[in-house]
Image (cartoon, rainbow, N blue to C red; front, side):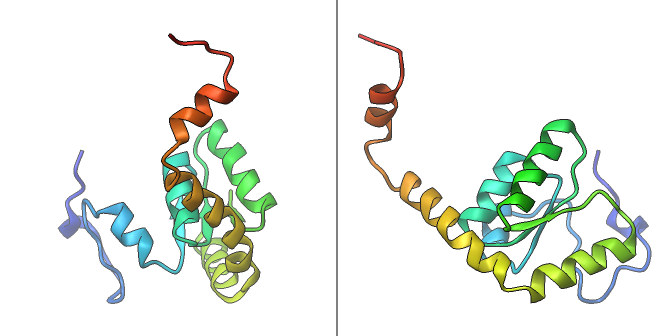
Length: 131
């Protein structure tokens, strides 16, 4: 279902509200990524070295949010109040440790994505003997 943007009230002037945005392009230029904690979104943010605020909806996202917080690359937020979100945004944008903690994780993802021998590595370390 598509939300009618015109039905939304009081959109701040510094917000851009769209029904669709190219997430990879947006995450590559973002200072912060607020997400439900899906692995695709989290990996994209980490790849682009963007700190996260995870507001999980499902159990698996709770686990991802816990890892994000545990690795110090973002905040696990269950409180969806405006005050809690605002505080999490301010903390994430001002505390430089989030960005510095992302660097090694990002490097791992970048190296994995640039490795032309990924299939060979999977075969080498898997128990499958495919002929």
